Length: 247
Image (cartoon, rainbow, N blue to C red; front, side, top):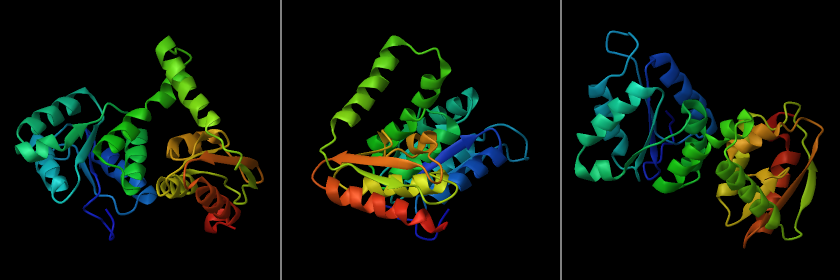
């Protein structure tokens, strides 16, 4: 999907009943995570809706070549069955490096792609995809007790990691922290040995940053901990003050 594809990253394969959904989602993720191999597989050979076993198997094998591993996202039940069947036919080495994510198709793809771009390993990319599903749970109003505690614990942990290095910065670009800036920040943070929050949310999560809904003119606090927290905070503040090339 991009000219600077780095095969040492984790690759993604997107399996949808619709070619348009698969290709559109791949295109969206590629905008946020250039350099990540993303292979869309959508629809049947005749152009109809459905999932194509042969092409799924082909793309899984191709994506694994030179990659750390492959994370697969599927949109509906029979797509999941197609992927599971295809994995059974992969070479053992490839199958051992392939994971099917239990994640929402679009949000999971974006989160996984950004993590893969940052050099995340197979487990990290899979976790990023599956964590994307928690955003729906938190909004649904039907939170299970365990999930509520899990989300709260994570947020509490992030809040508790502050080291007094917090800085405040005004969002300068009129569109705020929308998809592209959020992806840029998440990728940037992933490059440091530090844990950061922006406006109280995990700065390494593109979805959390987008959910923050920070708009132009809004002041947000950047806080962090870890060996490179000071450098990471400085880089994030500089990027936000720079307006991401939109001002």
